Length: 223
Ligand SMILES: *Cc1c(COP(=O)(O)O)cnc(C)c1O
Image (cartoon, rainbow, N blue to C red; front, side, top):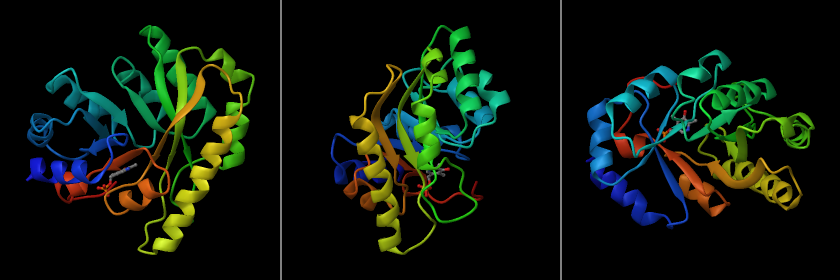
């Protein structure tokens, strides 16, 4: 099942697109099955759950934190996390930098942009992102790299609205990319698209998709 789902998705997207298999709430055996089918990039939204899975699974897996971050928990994943998608505060960047430094690592981060029209979604406005990436303070954070942006579209079937939201972030991403930013701010990754909308996200410029239920089946609870 998991293997077939993975291959179906892989075959439908170009090699340049990174597929993050979102395994939150799923048991280790499911992740092991995906691993056996060749998947190496996994996304989790709870730090403790990701740590437990990291401990139990092969060490060539790339772990992405896709959930909303609590600064006080960053320390538990600082020794292994490969990419943090949901950074929406400068304070969190500072904490990631501090913890990365302790492990002599540089941790890659995406700034989460608010593109959805809903109140419930986290994220920074485009103005707030510009302020952060152009700030003096960012230069001092030598143990983080800001490698791109992440966006979550509105939970809707309205294709036009989804497309509009993806396009707005892609445009902003392209504009920022052309500017000369600090060394630790090289924008290459645009993380947009989930099970329901990844085709549309890719069509509109995403190069990293976060897919859970289309690989592992539906979850008993959503977070
Ligand atoms: C759960 C989650 C996903 C995956 O959602 P699916 O609809 O199951 O593909 C993607 N991104 C984030 C931030 C998530 O929390």
